Length: 187
Image 1 (cartoon, rainbow, N blue to C red):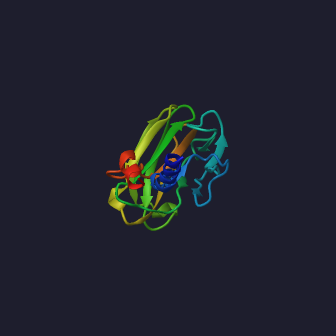
Image 2: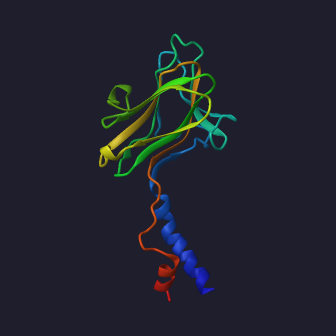
Image 3: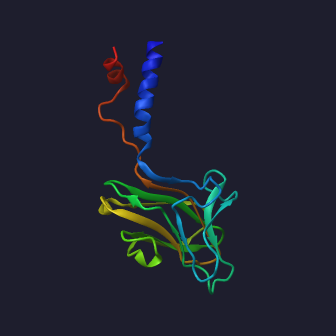
């Protein structure tokens, strides 16, 4: 019984620390655009939206944007809430074209969440196909700064799908913490 109580206490004490490293961890499973996210519309009148479909990377929902006429489509922005970046933080997500190919940029702003604020281009992707690809960008150069991160759909063909967006870093194990060491503290 004593071992079960000790194990329960250890799990309760260390679980929040292990899970707290992702500042943003969004799979869009709420079925609507999450609070704090910003959508900036291009000239086509279509915006990013949350959609339930088999094309989701995980779960049932994803964020997507589409346009039916390439002459006015694209330039739609999906912007994260503001985050305070720590050393070692990453911006990662999965993206795919609905079908065909799509182009997009990944941008960062330290001043605001309007389209004109995104001075830093973290990456540019052309010709993304219809299979999910994981994208990851190191945010370490922006440590200590409040930032907004954006996926700017430029459009190539029809629609872009984005899912499993995370900002932060994987939990790192507590140095020197082994089950034997933790158990020894309580004996």
